[in-house]
Image (cartoon, rainbow, N blue to C red; front, top):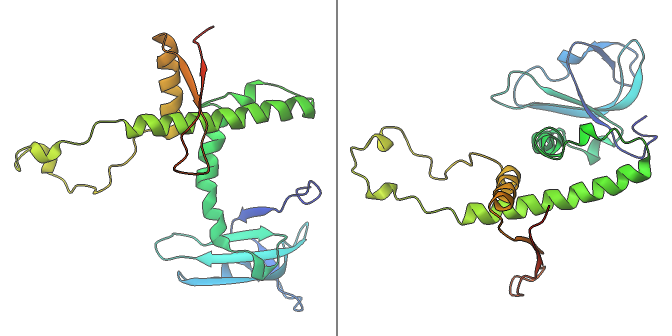
Length: 210
């Protein structure tokens, strides 16, 4: 179904299953493809003894991980990398921004694809706007003055991270900033990024309104 929709599946599976590696017709345990950290493998396989599926299997077990990553895809073995699955974490963050943490997409109940398409365009532009706004607010945060404290201060009791960790995402910071501006009757500005760093950034002004 994913392929029929014009997409490339990139699905992680667990290692409790069986697989054939053609031309062999012997069923092997998926857990035997990579057995130790530091190993990786990729190739064409027939996966699952019941409801078999011809696909490419990407297997990788990096040091420090409890289990390997086993990925099924329709891409050629030499054209894909199991590491791409690591992009999922950032995708999940955006997914939450679009749903319960942000634009509440799951409450729209739209059935018409054309209407959904228009809403998705608005969501995409709005998401970019919030990230830009949040980035601006983050850059305006006051610099740390921890160096002015006594060396015996409790702030130095634990090792310091040379790069302060972000407490909330740029998206959420932008959304909170926008809400705060509305509540304080501050005019809203839509910023447009420029492809050239030395070109002034245009601003479109919209008065605050309900």
